Length: 598
Ligand SMILES: Nc1ncnc2c1ncn2[C@@H]1O[C@H](COP(=O)(O)OP(=O)(O)OP(=O)(O)O)[C@@H](O)[C@H]1O
Image 1 (tube, rainbow, N blue to C red):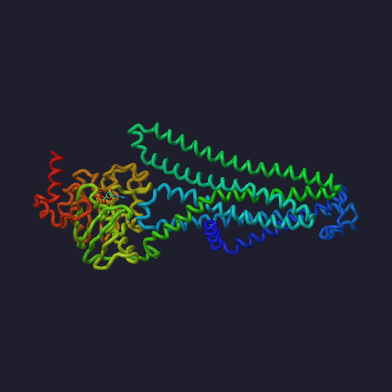
Image 2 (image 1 turned 90 degrees about the vertical axis):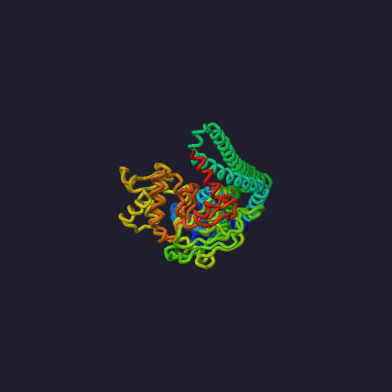
């Protein structure tokens, strides 16, 4: 209930008075419909179907003036009023339905933007904890279900108001009968509460299956090359058959549940009508007029009771989506990375002295023993090249993430020009950094757009200079569409080395104060790597370069080399100093690389 209230409050804040105007319009509609029912009584009477005694029904007496009109005119007048009421009611209904759609679609968009913005502002730790496909599932499916769940709740409220008004009218026609119908309806809703419980369980199953389905197919499509080259197609198809079978069973179960609950109501409806008619005729010797009332009230009220039960079941199935979206929003709020200022307003900083780590400790899971980084203290001077080397798993990328403020130290601190790195100045540092990852990300669009993403106003000349710097100009010129070539999903249509050069060009285009290269030249041949290294050498005095490299030839020219091992700094100095230490790790790494070449 708390979860539903959370979103109802949001829609109240979002839609404000439109929501209440709509509810009011719906109440008007039910009054018009009620008046229509009341009109049926004199109409039936005038038509001579049954002679209804209106003396007992005060409100119906309001229509007595109709009997003063000649009967040849009375019927057309009643029918005219009836049609008029129906027109007004349906015009109102059309307007309310459109307004409702505007509110619902607007709220869906609002929910999407709100959740997406919070996701974008969440820190890196949040993303390390979550599967990407789960986030996509939430953004795509669960938010829509939440929004349609809200719609069901609003419809439920309307149905309730509608029913109350109809009960009022039915009460005027026959209080005893109305009370009896209501007691029967409430009893049935009470005995059918097991359907609500089952609907909630099915909603949970639907959520889990949807999430697993998306996670599985995302993995398969992303890893299709490995699947094909290792002939894993069979096992993947078997997984797909199994999950779709469970999804099918869940949907069939849901329909069975819905239809069973409706069946109970329909059978109950027939039994109750038969029972009331029987009692009315056999025991109370009721007249035709009362029988007609029984049928009118039943046919009007009973579908409302059925609607209420169906709405409650629909709402129950969407509760897991409410919970999931609310939980996501809550987690994002907890993981908010920086104060929400527009990125455009924030200017990059100039690093004059350098970045310092003081006694930094870090681990990915705080409940596990052992740190990934232990007692790291180091200084990265501004406008120099610092290289991190070490065996695989030593903690190099983790440390870089700490320096960029992506990971937050559990103990110790990071300083930029002597100022501690905090939520307040983090975004300024990020604006200063350009990062080239091991597995670079490119968007499925043209080379030009991929580059302009970093610097939207860049001129043609700036684009080509950046490409030149990254030794990418030649291959881009050779493409038929040059800068306008579309490069496929994640740059699939380019070789690994071409992708790396393009990402490097993109990073340099921004003229960053700090350039971070995490194994950014690992896929390049010696010739291209050599060209990039000499370009980087020229940049050394203009920006702070932080490089991770396995190939030690890459870090020869670094001003400082830091060797990490098992999460600790083991050596620090110039390349020459460290290579001359026979017992040092760098020397061992060098020997291993030389042996591997032989
Ligand atoms: N998201 C994560 N969750 C848990 N542990 C992680 C995560 N990422 C890395 N690790 C662990 O942290 C340690 C350091 O990893 P890191 O990627 O920093 O090493 P690295 O020196 O950059 O390795 P490589 O040269 O192979 O890229 C490894 O033991 C790794 O298993």
